[in-house]
Structure formats: C-alpha cells, structure tokens
Image (cartoon, rainbow, N blue to C red; front, side, top):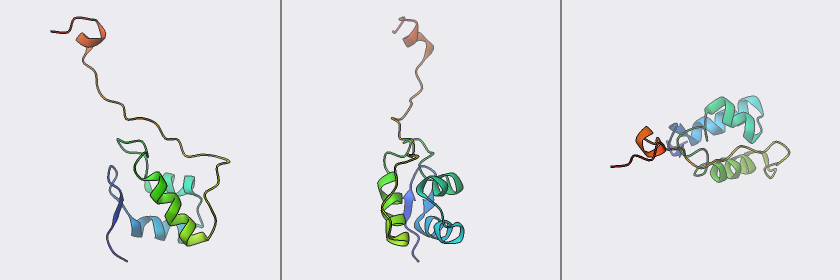
Length: 88
C-alpha cells in the first residue's frame, strides 16, 4: 500500500486507516478516534469524505449517520485587543 496522506493535519496515512479498519472492524467514528483522522486544525472538513469513502470500499457499507463525526469550522486565535475593541 502506498503512503498517501488522508488527514494532512494529523498526518494519517491511507495505510493507517486501512489497517485500523481491518484490524478492529471499525466504524468511521472508531477509525477517527483510533487514528486521529479529522481531529486536526481543519476539524475533519478535508478528510471526512475520504475516510468515509475508504471505509465504504473496505466494508462495502455506506457511512452510517447514527453517531455522526463532528465537523466544525477551524478555530483561529484572536488577539485580546480585537476582542476588547482596541484594534490599532
């Protein structure tokens, strides 16, 4: 298997996701928790569709949404001066 990075934020490779899904018979949520795919700076916005597609290929089942993976916009630091309204 090649060294294709699926989650750039946490540097999770296709091989890691594949091996985890096969070894532990994981759902998308379990793969995320075991590999940290989707837990980086982008919050899964980039890699979640790829993780779901990989698991669909491995297991033959579409991603379930009973317990969805949390996807959120990135959080960026804001200087306290901006919050206090004293922007220079």
